[in-house]
Amino acid sequence: MHRRPLLEMLDRYAQRYPAERAVAARIRLLVAGHADCFERSCRPGHITASAWVTTPACDRFLLVHHRKLGRWLQPGGHADGQTDVAAVALREAIEESGIAGLRHARKRPTPLDLDVHVIPARYDAAGRLIEDEHEHHDVRFLVWADGDAVPRTSDESHDVRWFTADELPAINDEESLLRLWRKASNR
Image (cartoon, rainbow, N blue to C red; front, side):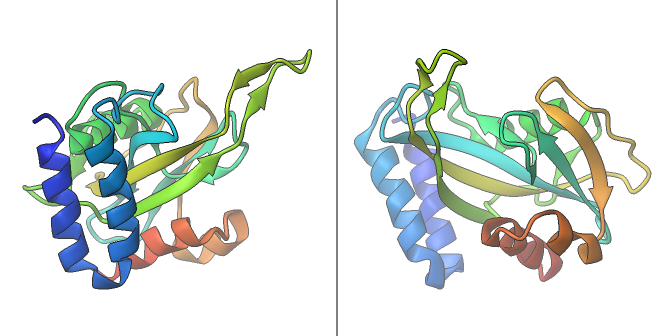
């Protein structure tokens, strides 16, 4: 079954973070119940993957200013049929940061965090529905970059840059992003 590796990964995550079993179970239900969970067309939501990009010293982290959402977020995106979510997270981080030398922090990548969030419906200028409201079931990984890596902005963002922990509350106070920072800092 092409979904088995992700299901096993979710089980390991629930064991590692017992307080977060509910979110792991929620994503598990989507994966177990929808053979097309890796496709954008899957509803009520689908699998996405993202990366908390930091230096091995965890003294800086990289965020992109998302073009569609207008917020500073970790790089990530849709699986688009790819079932290896760790590879999806790394691919998206490289594409969105322009940093070729990114690598997973662990030899056997395991999620740093899980998050389910609603993506609001989008409409064109005439008010026609472009995309309906749906959920992203995001599997998030810790990814390292060399401390001197220089990011480049992609077509998907307005900007990409390094931040320090002191800057985080001023640019994004969403719990899911703060949770990523706390987990990476305490690893």
